[in-house]
Amino acid sequence: MIKSIEDKLSKIPIVNKLVHFGKTIKIPGLRGLSLYDVLELYGIGIVKGALTTRAAGIAFSFFMAIFPFLLFILTLIPYIPIEGFQEGLFSIIQEALPPKTFDAVDGVLKDILNNQYGGLLSFGFLASIFLMANGVNAIFGGFEYSYHVKEYRTLLRSYFISLAVSLLMSFFLIITVVFVTLYQVALSKIDEKGWFDTNDLHLLYFGRGFLFLVMIFTIVSLLFRYGTKQGKEVRFFSPGAILTTVVSMISFYAFGIYVVKFAKYNELYGSIGTLLILMLFVWLNAIILLLGFELNATIYRLKQPNKTS
Image 1 (cartoon, rainbow, N blue to C red):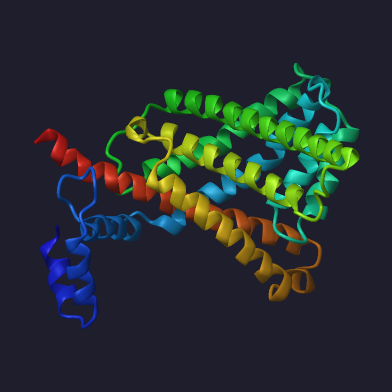
Image 2: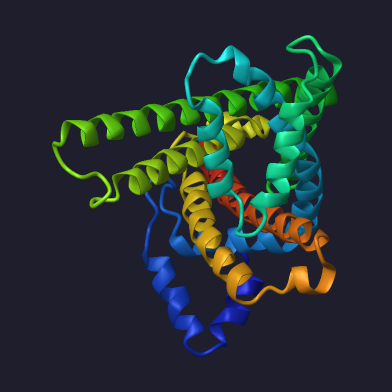
């Protein structure tokens, strides 16, 4: 790969041995390229790709799109004939948010429910679709600023795809809530029959966690698949999607511990501290999303010379 980087690393004790070890590990599908080659180009993409700046742009746009997205989902609730759907949606939102932040969001949700905007053809509902697509389009824009991306879409095509993907994301969220609701009903029936005690086995906790994990992985894979023109080469079970999902789950629990044990935002800023925690959480997950995308983009770029040759 890059000779100058290898020369610098070869002069550092222990690191040079790790480099040598990485070169001995060949990655399947890359025709002889090693783990070191992937990590080297991956690191270059992170350093030269202005990762944190792109994540800040994504976080701001996505934060602005959160409440229009919830408005879109809540407007659809009367048209979904599933008893307990609203409660299931609120429980998933509560689990997805950091500790101490749901109370602020809960107030907005109840305000939206108490002030309906006239159904599917109302201005508020149509505006929510537009703003929701803006959030997804910001994510795709962050992808295209990658060091490894060389092909770009037109503005109109990019926005059209963002709109379609945002609607698909809403569909997957609704499907997840439906499955969670039906799962809870099934567990209550099991308890009524007396077959076994589901609470002792923590089936509700593990089942909902599994469904939430599947939803996150599906949405991440969807973003990577349609985020750029080269995304059509990305498979559903891609290394970047797996990395993003695993790190997101780890960061969620770690961030929850940080908020509960160490963060003092509410003491410093009062009620606005809740929004600061939420913004920090969104920014952190934007970084994780970009890290997963950069891994897929790195592998794609390493494959290109082999294909052309």
